[in-house]
Length: 159
Image 1 (tube, rainbow, N blue to C red):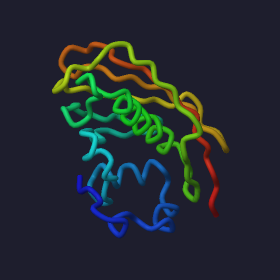
Image 2: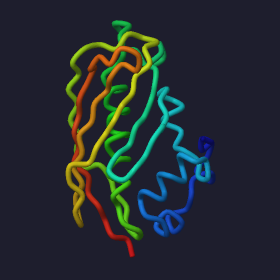
Image 3: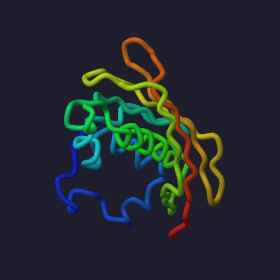
């Protein structure tokens, strides 16, 4: 998937609004649209989307550690917020957008640096004005549960 290198690489709002959220997410996954640069910066990428679901994969490296040398809590938050928000986006109708209102992260154990993880997120509710989703981060190879999270997003009709 190509990554946006400048704001000009991102689709203009009117192009986003012409697609359903699922169509837009599928366009990013297929490479038809550029993905946002945060994933490259943080070491994770979108790997799967379907209605009500988004999956990201990533590997935290030294550049995302805290002063103690362990994976910074913000990395868990960024990964979960990305997956949770994208899962809600898959349920957003054409002509609407979403943004995160709040999210919660429960870190259950430290992810060792260099450990590949998978973050899955599933929608619990997608209505006219809000979307709610839950997700988890697990080890890709061992299935260990590292963190869980949830979100509430606002869905806004723009047309």
